[in-house]
Length: 306
Image (tube, rainbow, N blue to C red; front, side, top):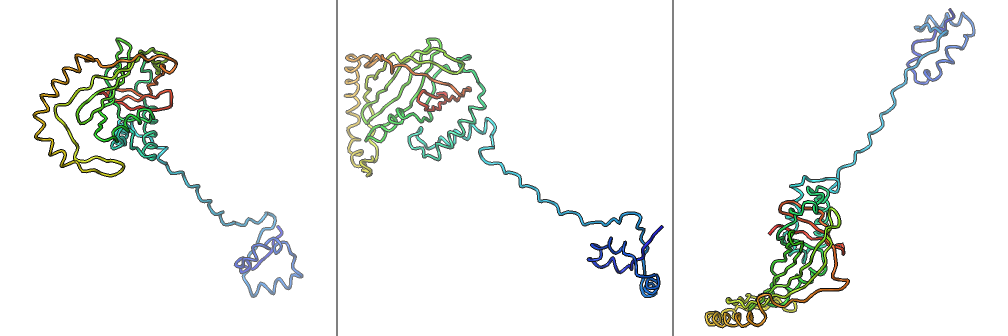
C-alpha cells in the first residue's frame, strides 16, 4: 500500500485543509529528506488509495417565514356574539340618521356575518317566522332617513317606524308615528305580497293613508329646541302653559270628537298605482326576534320584533 507521511501540524492550519490533496500526492524529493524531517516532527500516515473526507461545517439554517397574523376581517364571531355586537353598534345611531361612515362600515360588516350564519336560509318557506309586527332599528334607505330627519323640525317627534306582515292576508303595512306639541298622527302604506323565491317577496303597493290627527290632552313643550343651529330656551314658555293645561283638556276632547265625526277614525286614504307602486323585499336573516331585509335600491333594514 502506497502511503504518504504528513506532519500532524499540517492539519491545524486552515490553508492546509484546502490543499490537502496536493500535499498527499506530492512525492518527496528523496527518502533521506523525509527521514530527516521525521526526526523533528510527528507524522501521520494517510492511506491515499481512498479519497480524503473532510467534514464541512453545517449550512446556516434559513429563518422561518413569518406567519400572517389574523385580522378583524378574518375573525368570525359566533352567532350570539355577532348579534349582540350588531345591537350594540346600533345604539346611538338614531335608526341610522346620525350614524357616521365608520359606524356604518362596522354595521355592514356585522350584518354580513349574520347573513352568512342565517338560521333561516329560506324564510319565505316558513312565513310564520316573518309574521307579526316588527320595529325598525336601523336603515340606510334615503327615503326613511328623510322621514327620520323630521325630528330636526321644532316641536316634531318621530315615533316608532313599524312593519307589520300579515301572512293570512298576505299584506305588508309600514307605519310611522309623528307627534307635535298638540297632536299626533301616523303615516301608513299598505301593500300585498307574493312569494317569488325562498328569500324574496314581491310587494305591490295598494294605498297610503294619513291617520286622523289626535289632539293631545297633555301639551308637552320641550325645555329647549334647536333653531338654525342655535339652542332656544323654552323654560319660561313651558311654565306659563302649566295653568292652562286643565282648561285645555276639556277643549281637546271636544275637538277630537268633531274631527272623528268629519274625517272618520281611519283618516285620509289615497290609492297608490303606477309603475312605482311595485317593489321587492329580500329577507337575508330571520330568527325569533331579529330580521334583516334588503330593498331594491340596495338599502338595508334591521328590525326587531315589537
